[in-house]
Length: 409
Image (cartoon, rainbow, N blue to C red; front, side, top):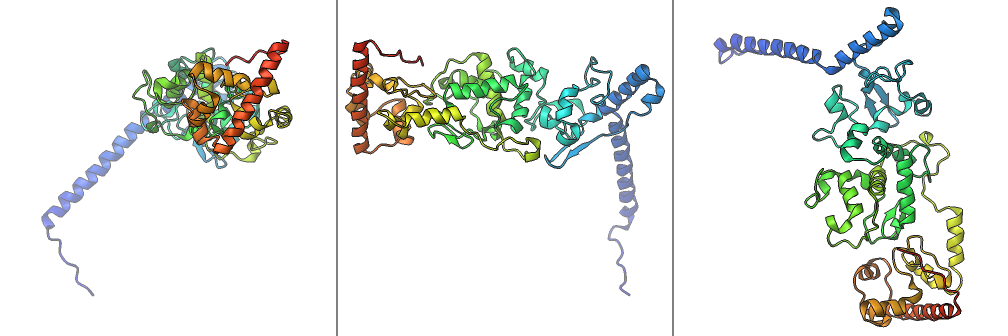
C-alpha cells in the first residue's frame, strides 16, 4: 500500500480548516440575512394581509408563498414578476396600487400569462426579484419596464404608457393596424405617408440610400453616437431627436426634415425600436402572414402607373420620391419635387440645364444616382428625353388650364 505523505505544514492544518469553516458559516448567515431582506417578502406579506382583510383568513391561506416563476419555453422567458405582483389574476383588486392590482381581464383572455409571460409585453428583467433590478433602468440591462414612469421621463405625449406598444409590435409587426396600439398604428401610418421605404429597406422592401431598418431595434445603445444629443443618452431618445431634426445628430445625412410633431417622432421611434429579431411562434399570431405586403389598392395603382407615358419613371424607381402629375404618376412618398416641370425647376433653382445637372448631380440626387438609381450615360439621355416630354405636357396642360396643382412636400 502506498504510504501517505505527511503535510508539509502540519501545524497550519487545523487553523486553516477552522478559518474555512468560519467563512462558510459566516457566508451562510450573511446569505440568510440578505435573503430575508428581499422586497418580495414584504409584498407577499402585505398582499396576504390585504386578502385576509377583504376575503378572510381562510382565503388568505391560499395565497402562494415563496418565489414564483412562469417559464415560457416558446419565447425562452423565465419571469418571476408574479412573485410580487400576486394580484394579477385575483378579482377585487382592480383599483389597488401596484404591485397589488388585478390585471385587466380582457388582455389576459387573449394574452394568458402562462403562454406569454410578463416581460414579453411589459419589458423588464424577468429573473429579478427586487424592484430596481426588475423594473430598471439599471446598468447593463437595456430593457426596462415600459410603464407610465418611463413614459413620463421621456415626456411621451397623451399616453405615458404608450411605449409598451413597442412590445406589442414585436409580435404584431406585420399587422397593417393593431387594435389597442394607437401609438404604433400612428408610426406605421407615418412610414406609409412619409415614404420611408424610398430610402430604407423595411421587412425586405425599400431603398438602399439609408440603413436597413428591419432589425434596427436590436442595435445596442453603445452603437449610437450620443455626442450631439442633449438630455437622456438612450437609443429611444436618439431616434426621437434624429426624426425631429436629422442633421442635428448626423450633419452629413441626406435624410430630409419631415417637420414631425413630438408625438409623431415618439410614435415612429417606438415603432423603430420594436423592429427586433424575436422567436415568435406562428401560433402566437395565427392567420397573420409573416410578410409586409402592399395592399391590393397599392398594387393596382402601381400596375396602372406602369403603362403609358410615365412608365419609365416607375420602372426606374424615380416615382418612389417624385410624382409626375402630368403623366398621372403619384409618388407614395412625395418627398421630392414633382418632375413635371423639372426642366424649368432645375434651371431656376440651380442655374443649370437638366442635361448638365444629370451629368453631375449635387445634393441628395448625387447620392440617389450613385447608390440607388444608377443610370448609364445612355439611360441618362433617355431620362432627359422623358423629362422634356413631361415638361412639354406640363406647358400644354398649363396653357389649357387643366394642370392639377402639385402636392406639397
